[in-house]
Image (cartoon, rainbow, N blue to C red; front, side):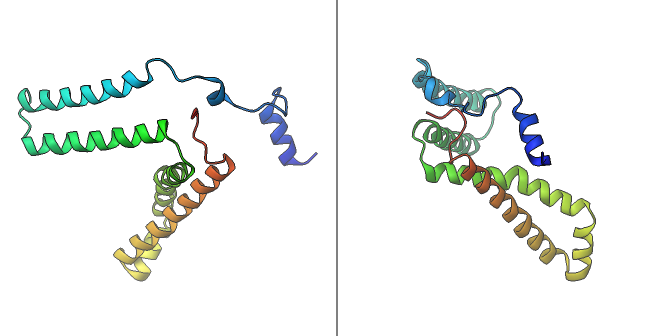
Amino acid sequence: MSTLKYLIFRIRGWIPKEYQVTLAHNIPKPVWWKPLWIAVLLLSVASAVVSYFVFGIPVDRVVLGIFLTCFCIGIAYYIRVRPSIQVNRALYILLGITPLGFSIWMAFALSGLGRQLTNAIGALPSLLIGWAVCLSVGAVIGNWIGRRRGYRLPLTP
């Protein structure tokens, strides 16, 4: 038995081969789904009002904060309620760039290769090349993971 087959059998354990994780198809949307989004928006506005009156944060910062919060809530609502392949692919790529690409870049910088590249070509070109290569590798890995999953997010309907 090859090492790969051994690892697959070891990881799968007792789970039958025909078993598919289909939690999203079997779970109906909860009753609190719509009130959740309304409550999140109202709590965001309430926290902005408290920030202004209690903590004395300037109005421009409060308005910018509530705008960014509403923007992020809108994106989260769109991702969870109206999923599409293009948006899910973009999310997988971004999730590949953020933790994976950044981790690769940190490993590159801490390994000493970054210092050698900096000594050879300079600081700014080294930084740009390191970011471009490492973040691109993270994006490719994120896209690969998304393609393997069919660009379906966990627990999406």
